[in-house]
Image 1 (cartoon, rainbow, N blue to C red):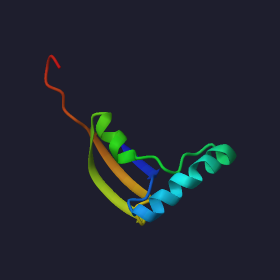
Image 2: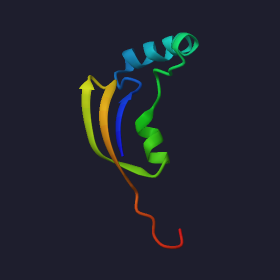
Image 3: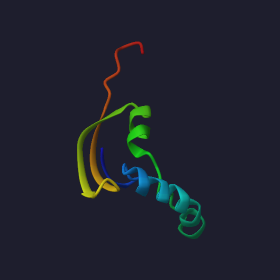
Length: 73
């Protein structure tokens, strides 16, 4: 799976600013700017095969592959 994704900054200061601004962006554009996409990818049973930072740690191109499930799991 290929994703072009925006997410919460890994910089603690910028990340907190994004958390603070998120209610405004949701209200006016419908987009959450503070998603923790990499955490969600792991919970969805995918692995990040490629992680290219396009705009600091906020915009990234991600290549994902599914975690192989063993038979019966």
